[in-house]
Length: 220
Image (cartoon, rainbow, N blue to C red):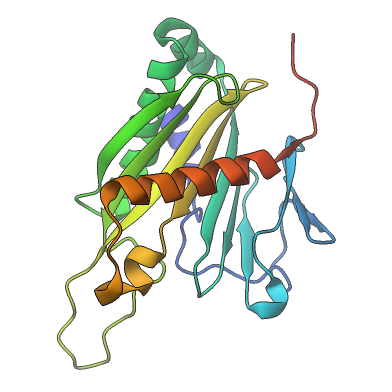
């Protein structure tokens, strides 16, 4: 049941056909340059400028920010149903977050980009009461990859790398995801080690998370 719910809600999270906020109705809303989620759980300053071609697309539970240069960010906020609450209480937070990433997030990546896999993951016990950060490689899964000209032999797809940060607040599970654009846009000059890639993604994810403003009081 929850897998069907997740698949429905995640539709368009990492879509190729993102639409501008100026031409598409949002489930949430823009208050100046701040996006307010449709759930009413959080708001966040937009990391893209629509005046410079930045795009914002959302559903009831997911918002995606992107541009053509170096930004592809998504923030999901899903209410936990009784089954998910039971999974967390039974597994413990660390194993629950890993389970959620593997069974829902990575499964969705694999459905659209076969061969996607977890490169590594680690638990951050002190961050937002306990958070998981996972790094995944997605063959052909980059928003920034140039398409081959008509008639030309298609280039071998680059394995896009995305960092994903998961945590639970107020019986909602948050899933923040960022693509490491430089892996694709810099191509021949790209020389970051795996450790440096992870460090860059972790810094960007935690910075994004710290910009979230939660709009509901913590439940007792």
